[in-house]
Length: 115
Image 1 (tube, rainbow, N blue to C red):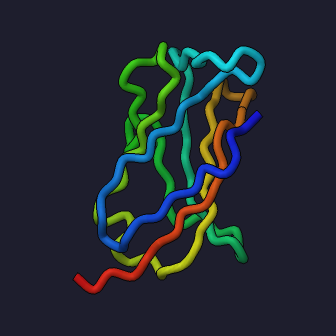
Image 2 (image 1 turned 120 degrees about the vertical axis):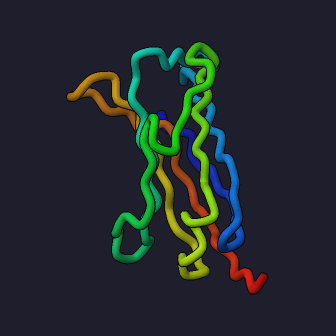
């Protein structure tokens, strides 16, 4: 089951690492992500259009696969031109080409930055 309520805020143009911990829903222990692929998307709440996406090796790292942590690196260019508002985000892991598991969902609030 996906971890819900994974909400965060970021100012336009800021950098941030979003860390998602993938835990076994039965035991609460970290899931080994060795051999998995990962995808993370941010999308509009009304139109459902994807406005930002990252994948393993392209903005996403799994520094130690056995600890179940996914690190999504947001750089300044990712958020600089986003309209300030609340977006949805979702992280999925792929066991193979046919098995997909949503592991995290939440909101990303982009706040106006004049600096």
